[in-house]
Each structure stands twice: as structure tokens, then as C-alpha cells.
Image (cartoon, rainbow, N blue to C red; front, side, top):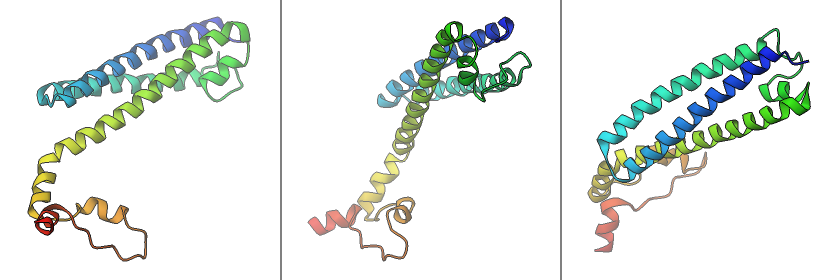
Length: 168
């Protein structure tokens, strides 16, 4: 049987997790707009907000561990969802369903954050990439090894200024 106090603590945890997930989603949306507008100062401000929100998320993950190990928690299951699905299905299913939705939202935010990071990384090196292209340098060294299968000779690349020179 799920202890009512443990159940309420899980409900409170999911409430806080949902607020943090929504906050992260809003910050990522604003960061995406700022990045597209090349608004450096706003991107920097959003980065600070994101660091703070991710810190809150880390705190919640630690709290989840204590909920899982709590003496009042159901003895079966290794995740919060498994523990919620096990005992009183009718009462816990609604909370488990909500926890699953919040978990999926966090996973989507994770993917959006990674995509935004990659975009910002490439925008940060945009100027050096243009200079590299105009100077005649081939592909940046970062991509050479990953684009080549082991044991194969790397094909000659025509990139940057060399491409423009050859075309002229």
C-alpha cells in the first residue's frame, strides 16, 4: 500500500518538476529567438537563467532519489513511475500519467537544448569559418577524422578559397 504522506510528497515533487520543466522550456524558446536575432546580450542573459533552472532540476533529481529510497515508498519498482503504477492503480495512475508527461517534456527540452547549443556553437565560429573558406583552407580539422573511415586514405578536398580559385 502506498503511504498517503509519500504519495503527497511525490505529487509535490511532480508539481515542482513541472514548474522547472516549463521554466526551462520558456528559457529555451527565448534563447532560440535571441540566437536567431543574433542578440548576444540576450543570449548571455538567457544562458544565466538556463544555468539556474538546470541547477533546480539537479536538486529535484536528488530529491527523487530520496523519494525512491524512502521507507514509505512501495517496495517494488526502481523508478517513480514503476512505484506509482504498482499499488493503488486507480489513485496512482493519474499521478503516474502526469509524471510521465512531465518526464517527456523534460526529454524534449533536453533535445532542444542540445540543438540550440549546436546552433550557437556554429554561429560562434561563423566568422572564422568564412575567413577559412576565403583563405583557401580545407575542412576544419575537427571534421576530418570523423568523416573518414579508419584505414582509408582521406580524399583530397576542395574547399574554401581553393574552390573559388579553381572556379575562377
